[in-house]
Image (cartoon, rainbow, N blue to C red):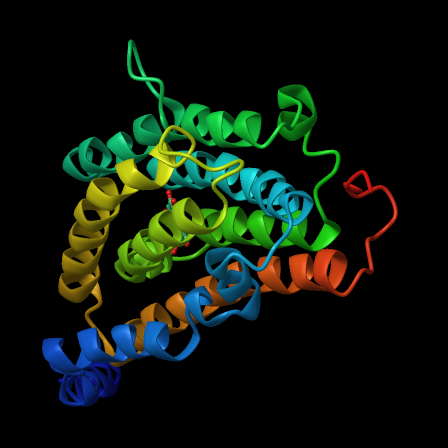
Length: 258
Ligand SMILES: O=C(O)c1cc(C(=O)O)c2c(n1)C(=O)C(=O)c1cc(C(=O)O)[nH]c1-2
């Protein structure tokens, strides 16, 4: 055996030894959510607890539109990199869930029903002209991450969705209860639909990541991808808090009428 081959084998053996067992790997991914998912952010506590004014809820919805519009772009970026037809077939429904197809209007349209319900002008929302600078940077960082990282790591970055159904349930009940003047079942349709879509997507992505991260380094990179994604979500809320709770609205950003 040549030195190079034996070295390579030794390093493969070392990697295999250090590989986290699947249950431990899954627990490490879930621990990231328990520690830093955006359900812990004070802005969400205010939103769900009825502590925001209508203009503050408008600011949240129009900024979050940037995230909604970035999600199918990052899914398209991922699909463009896949050589595995089965995986493309599985992933493409995410794009269609958001953009819609045929008679199915899709999640972005449902989001715009929410912003309509809040009295925001559609063209203004879709233009993203009033969105906060940090929102735009955060969502674009997510698209870039998925475009550039190894496929398994890119897929792992979607795993925050494991934690989403809980926050969606809290949001539906909290907002319906606390904002009867401008929130009703119709405008909450986006989140109701996600209650079935998100678990399906997250279960598939989790299974894929658990199976395809073959070295300790890859496993660590996947756990880091979930941390990265929590940061994408958290920084959007920090920006909202700074602008619309602390009152430091950046130049050019949405300014609620007094
Ligand atoms: O309301 C939320 O808190 C929330 C969080 C997340 C998430 O964890 O990334 C998603 C969504 N909603 C969501 O509606 C959605 O469609 C979605 C797609 C993805 C993704 O990474 O592919 N995350 C999320």
